[in-house]
Each structure stands twice: as structure tokens, then as C-alpha cells.
Image 1 (cartoon, rainbow, N blue to C red):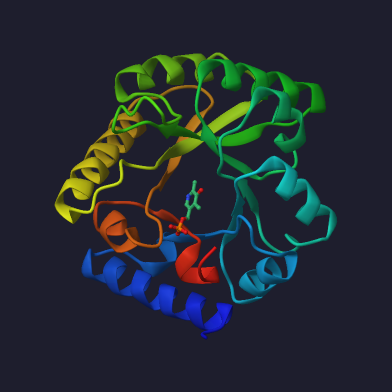
Image 2 (spheres, rainbow, N blue to C red):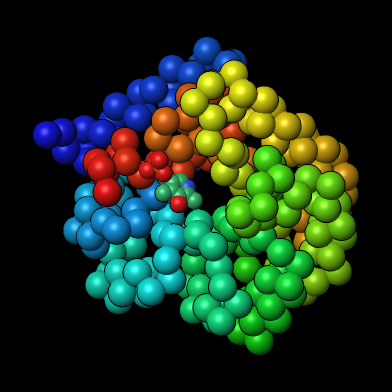
Length: 229
Ligand SMILES: *Cc1c(COP(=O)(O)O)cnc(C)c1O
């Protein structure tokens, strides 16, 4: 069995290879360890192996591991579906909420952040495949959400996140990654208040090299880093 630090090392090497092959710097790609179901000790090992951030999916799990000091030394992201009754538990606790998926969540996060006297950094999750069962803003509604963000205090949008439809065909997957990169370029070109586009978060264990080739600069990796869940 390979260790978490071996896995991080191997993933970093793969990231560096594709980054360089696409004319970019390996340092521009942020590696987020997706640590759902993994122990506080596993998370600590990932952090000491040098991941750039840790991403949690479930609020309850995040709160538990947080109280065990699991995240010391690395930024903490919330990457799961956020229910409105859990907003207060993540705003101000997470450095980045990668999965802002609706106008009402945006308003609630902004309100909570304002009451704490902070600005919460977020990424907007895009439902790039228009899948009814999936969270996120459909591409046609993205501009409207950015407008709302520009009029909402307590929030700063740092970019976009996506979990494309499952595609066994890598070519089809790349089609969705390309759409995301275009959306990222489009919103970067527009000047909204409260929006400072830096991150395009896409790519997981089985797709991060394709995602980076398509322009991702933040990958969220679980299985390849921690082993099977
Ligand atoms: C679990 C998860 C990942 C990582 O998935 P793997 O396939 O295990 O790498 C990435 N993003 C989100 C939102 C996740 O829930």
C-alpha cells in the first residue's frame, strides 16, 4: 500500500508534467485534498505532505475534524452541497466555499458574513451539464448570479467550480471542461464588483490531467490521494 505522502508526491509529478506540457507553471495549479470519510490523522498527513488545501463535503464531518485540529496548517474549503440551515457553520470557518450553488445561498452567505464582520470567499458551482439532479448554476444563469454577487456585501467570488457529468469517454468530458474554461474566460473579462476571478476548480482523481490541459488551476483529489473510500 502506498502512503499518503507517496500519493501526494506522484500526483504533484503528474500535475507538473501536464502543466509544463500545456505551457504553464506547476505552481499555478492548486491541489485540494478531498478528504470526505477520511480521518483527522489522514488529513494531517496530507497537509504535511504539502497539499495546498483540504476540502470537506459534509458539514458535520468538517465540524468534528475541525475540533480535532485536523486542518491546522492548510486552508480549508467546503466543497459539498451546502444546505441553508448549515450556512452558519461554514461561513467564517472555511477559507473558501467552492460550492456556492444558488442565488438564495449567495444571499444567506453574504448576510452571515456581514454579521460576522468578514468577507467570505466563494467559488460559484456551475452545473455545466444541465443535470437536474446536480447542484449548481446552469451556464445561462451565470451572469445573473454574478450581477447579484456584485450587489451583495460580505461575499467575494474568486472563480468557478464544476463537477461535469460522468463520462467514460474522455473526449466528451473534455467538451465540458472546455465549456467551463470559456465561461471562466468570459466572466474574467467582465468587471463585476465583489468578483476577482482567479480560480477554475475542476478535475478529480480520474480526470485531473484532462482538466488541467483544459485550463483548470485547482484540482480536488480524494481517491488517488487517500485511497478508496
Ligand atoms: C469526493 C469529491 C472529489 C474527489 O473525488 P475523487 O474521485 O475521489 O478524487 C472532488 N470534488 C468533490 C466535490 C467531491 O465530493
